[in-house]
Amino acid sequence: MKVAVTIARILVGVLFIFSGLVKAIDPLGLAYKMQEFFEVWKDSGYLPGLMSWLDAHAFMFSIIMITLEVAFGVALLVGWRKKLTMRLLLLLIAFFTFLTSYVLFSGKIRACGCFGDCIPLTPIQTFTKDIVLLVLILFLLRKQKYIEPIFKEKLPFALVLLSVIATCLLQMHVVEHLPTTDCLPFKKGNNILELRKMPADAVPDKFSYSFIYEKDGVKKEFTSDLPDSTWKFVDRKQTLVEKGKNNMPPINDFSLSDAEGNDSTEAILTKPSYYLFFVKNMEEANAAKWQSVFTDLVKKARQQQLPIYVLTSDPKAANVFFNVTNSYNLPIYTTDGTAIKTAARANPTIFVMKGPVVQEKYSWADLKELVK
Image (tube, rainbow, N blue to C red; front, side, top):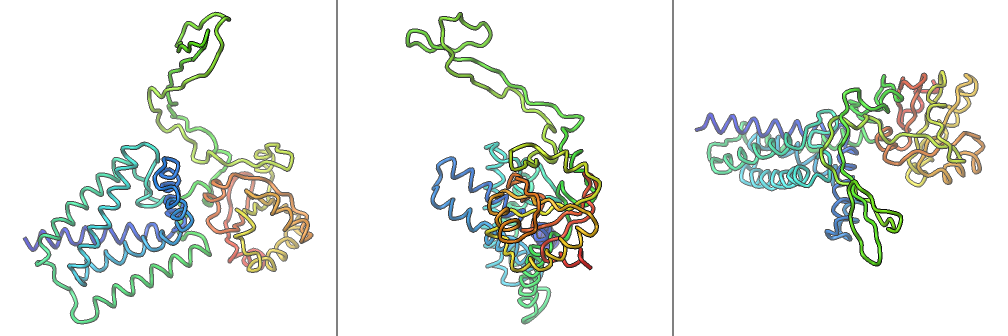
């Protein structure tokens, strides 16, 4: 029995540590996934006030959740406070199982993000993983007398505390300097224009359509043979018959619109060399931290005759900052806020581009590397 407990202990501990660390390299990714849950529940009418509050504090919850995963995994492996650790692990896996079951059975969220963007799992895979972990944790809870600390005295607590500090420091670092491992569609070396195209093996969704017409106060639904002109069209219904496969391009919400609303995506992304400066919004950008270095970058770019395009979801505020308050005279393009969250984990982030291919990515904290 002790051997079985040891194996289960190692599996659960290592999986929790691995799951936490995979997300720790991109904590904003988990925060955005949490916001997706909160927004879906809010729209469904589940405690909308609470969901709005949780949505506003999603980043804090992301940091806490990731840190707890790593800390509980380490605590289980070293045998620190086994009763407390096992109970907290049970609560955590019960919560994860609820989330993955919601993703699987509701169909309202595409994935739970359990292993971040670097290891995408299907809803059934994540749900199965959590069920297996739940069974293992229940087994360990019943057989916890076989769990012994691998170190004596204060060392187990010191290791747990060290894991908490290290995980928090890692997350603080990547929030300022971008994820240490980039697994997103806008990573270095990717061709943005190519990734906006539908995959070659895409199978589209199949829908059935029906039409509602009205005559003399009576509404009737038609599927194929439509009524004559004495009937008045009211509405059209679309019903999903068969879900497609692989029918979403890796980059599906990225476009650039100029001040007149014209689509300038291909015109910009086919230029030889240039910079894309992503600013989600100026209110959160904290320009005081990067404006001085950015000014040097603008001077260097003009000497090299390389244009800088500012991409933002808040074009009015960006234009005021870059072209009214400051005389940068840079073109401003509107981009979907979700696309900016995916492309630029730090606010702001700059891309060094050659044609549609990403050459380098720098957060605001690393802009000085571009002006050396």
